[in-house]
Length: 276
Image (cartoon, rainbow, N blue to C red; front, side, top):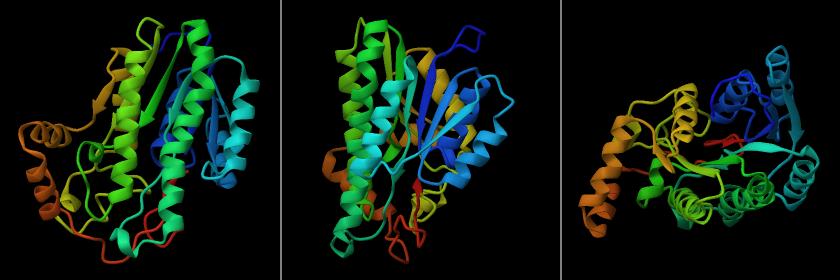
């Protein structure tokens, strides 16, 4: 992902209306990509397009709810029309918090559709073209919680574990094609999701990274060919610790340092939100 002046193709960013998605869209436009910014919130996408209008690449908006079949179909059709897609950033996601038995099942299934189904569908849509042209990359936003179970955020952590495993498997399948894939695993971040910030245990006190820091780290990791990038030294320590401990101890430790939110966290504005 060099910053030279060569002609760029499209960069597609989901969840582009806020947080890391917005930061990705701004940075990629600055680097000369034409950016397709996908999200549900039209007003925020329009503001992003105005903000980046004078940059080299610029931003085109696509309003789509990737939790729905209609939104996914609309997005896949638009991707087919773009032509050359150089980079896909699967960033959109939902984090719900609270005990699983108290969770509305529609919320949890919606999180799975967005965090898993949309990631798989969009990667499948762009990768054949990348392989044919022997050029392109996909960044799948996972999380540091992908490496261990996360009580009180059980479905969220499980979906991110899927993203991590899926991305690593693709990296092996794509060897020799010159198509790169990266599982981006940030920890506490200053975004609308802020999973750690809403935890009442020790993890809620972890220092937070700026979205811009995470984006720069991701693009640098992609440049050097990394497949998994854990951002932040504390997060790297947590992941390393998991390699040394038996699974039962990891579960016990996470149960000690995590506590349920004081109120049920959802994705509808009453608690945790989605980066979309």
